[in-house]
Image (cartoon, rainbow, N blue to C red):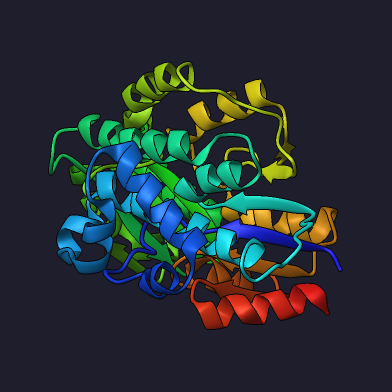
Length: 314
């Protein structure tokens, strides 16, 4: 059976996520403890007992989601004894970093510090309340691109996430986001909704963050990936550490090609099963909308991980 393991991105966070894993499995507790040690702060306390608005901050959400995702994977392959051999791994934005950690490209302690810095750099790239994002529902890619070009000829707003057919996020300066929302219906887009994010992720305005990230890349050890990683930036597989870093650099200010990634995995690689490991079920929902008839499971709790273990052994 050919399957992919996929990891969620920002937006999957919720207060209390991963607590069952932490309390029941030593391997999960070890990961939470390592995150706290690596960041020199109580990320675990924030995840389990913190304020939702504080957990949602980019600098906190990114390491928190990665920590819960890697903890879940360690439980699956540790105490539950599952042997994994995916055809590939992938993740949505932040989730791509989790996939790289899961496939041995970067150590967890380095990865969790890297995504904490990524969150800080992304937030610092644009002053607060200057940039943002919106979700456009019901239009084609072509519709979205034409809309952006019409209200922002110099790329002040642009496509940021191609999530699934009929669901595209745009990113840029708030005035242009508002103009795009106002004009959306005239371009065949059914609904346009401002997203509650504090920066224009995956837009040209993230280039300063990308430059800072490049400096951070140079401080850590990178290894050949154990599995093909399907990159957000071009929906193609990669294992080479130098090429991975180039794609991560570009990912910061380029659209996330999630729909293309699912199409490549299901079409070109013939993958029939997609297993989302980590909090929430966001990616499973997107995969379902990208292609019908796939076997999909989200696993972030002990019960769901046990169900996944059974599938892997079937």
